[in-house]
Length: 333
Ligand SMILES: [Zn+2]
Image 1 (cartoon, rainbow, N blue to C red):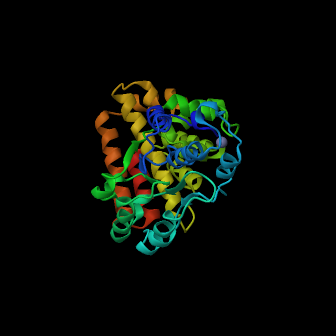
Image 2 (image 1 turned 120 degrees about the vertical axis):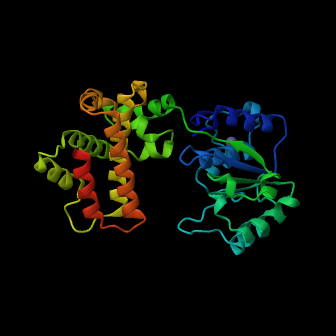
Image 3 (image 1 turned 30 degrees about the vertical axis):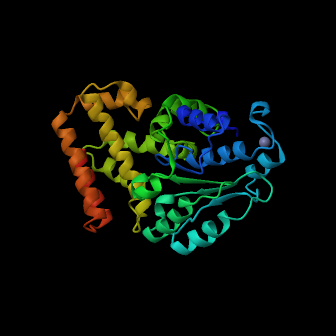
């Protein structure tokens, strides 16, 4: 990967590049934006630019100097990626031992010591206050990058000392060209995959053919359920795996997401919204046919039923299987 080849967010890319070219490197940055848009990758690529052994104006896009190669493999002694996976909060001791104590040491082999703290919003208040102390007197040869999807959870005194770089969702066209290079997704499903990614590179990369085929089958089945065809409803239970005793909550959430997209598409078709907003693009004709037989009011009512069913399961602890069955009967009407 090279900095210029990072997907989307061109303005952020330019701001960072210019700060380097003009020697205005900040000691602390916040990379803020939704998840899955490549903020951490940007931070790592930016670290390469900062510590590259070759002068920026002579540097090749895919630089293989010893510094860039080490950062690529994440074995550079001066580039430290702090991730606390599986932990709900980042605590004060972790900030002290992993950052505060190390930041004042001189770099081993590069000009700068670079710390990238992922999911920075997970620092609890004590950890943030400890971190603030480091920011108040930053060592000249260090750069700290906080990566966050919830900047509102970062205390204002930290925010005011950092240069904030905003990241936004990736454009559909960029996601599309990336997916076209991904052999695991059929070309006919590309449009659906682009919509499902909702501007997130992470989501796009996690999609595979099997998942899209499953979605398409469920959506097709939803289109065919009728109150007078109980077998269709039962085959839908089977298809989504809800005929078994134990229903995995993540899977159920996924299925509810599919139903929600189906209803959303129907409503958009009904109100004649631009057709490029439809998630299940490859099924437009079937969806339009279904929508033509329903009133807008009945579709909105179904959406309300879906929401209250989800609320029942997640908040009121309703029996998942019964709640789903009840919902299907209502949706089939
Ligand atoms: Zn290099």
